[in-house]
Amino acid sequence: MLCFYLYLFQVIIGNQGVQNPKEPEAVSNYDSLNVHDLVVVQLDEEESSDPPYIGKVLEVLEDDVIIHWMRGGYHRQWKEWYTGCGKNRQPYCDTIAKRSILLYGFSLTRKGCLPKETAANIKSAYEDEDC
Image 1 (tube, rainbow, N blue to C red):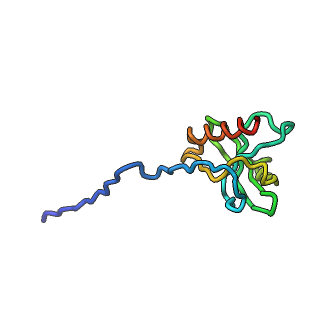
Image 2 (cartoon, rainbow, N blue to C red):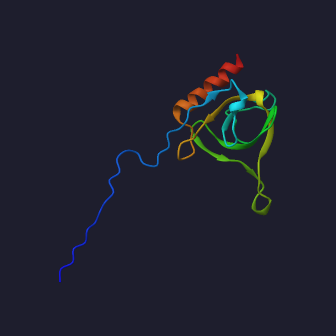
Image 3 (cartoon, rainbow, N blue to C red):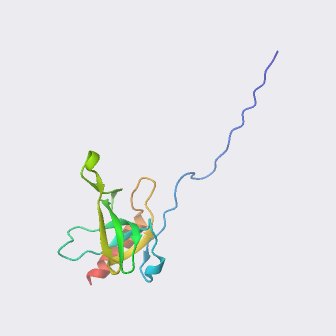
């Protein structure tokens, strides 16, 4: 007896699973700021040493936002920042004023890096703030 097996292969065209990163928006209206948005923050000069400063919004308050800080760089992977280790591991969170947010609503690549255009927009936003 002959058996024939029919194999069907799914043909996938294009970059499947690759996110199209969202570009950052300048803050013109804090009402559109949402939980889980990534934000770029301008710190006071005595607090800042080497930008960019990026965090994920955990809660939006009236004049402030609570963010979970992230660690990374313009050309490095970004990861959520935690303090402690083991059972003592806690997210590194902070409450910041909404007015200190330069950009928001962008996304990272699948590998957690800043897309080139987003990195350029962030550098430009920091330069504009320094003037």
